[in-house]
Amino acid sequence: MRLPAYGKTLLKLREAGKSPWVVVVALGHIIDTETLKGQAGVSRIGLPFDYPIDTSDLAILRGLDVLVSLFKPETVSAADARILSQRQIRAIFDRGEPGLLWCVSGQTASPLSLWRTEFLTGSIEVPLDADFRQCFAWWRKCAVLEARGVFSRAEFDPVRERVRRELSA
Image (cartoon, rainbow, N blue to C red):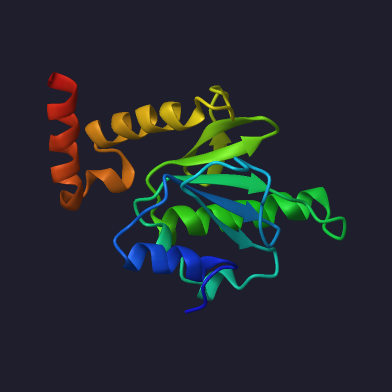
């Protein structure tokens, strides 16, 4: 299986038992160096449109929070870019199994949710400022407590119990 651009760095981090607080995934581009620039604990990978998404290894995203930034190269039409982005987001959901999945929109981010085959951004827009990390952590705690998505698995039971103890203290 082929890793995404800059995936080896994230893989080595995970193999060392560490995790970033968020992974910025550039769709349609090799890397996004601007989103959350200068913030510690941010990993970055890229999925250009010519990336072989069907044979890629996205398991390095399992349980991690992901912030997707969309790029549209000039050589790709808006309609094709939308189709390719949806295909890549579907692969991230299905094969990457991230914790939370958000989409960058200018200087804000919104949660992505999968409903049937459509990807919809929520009505919530959170500024990508100094408080974004705390906001993101709050959303993650909610997802863990509600056992949503990948967090419904038994392997996250200890995390759920830790969050419950934390909130009841």
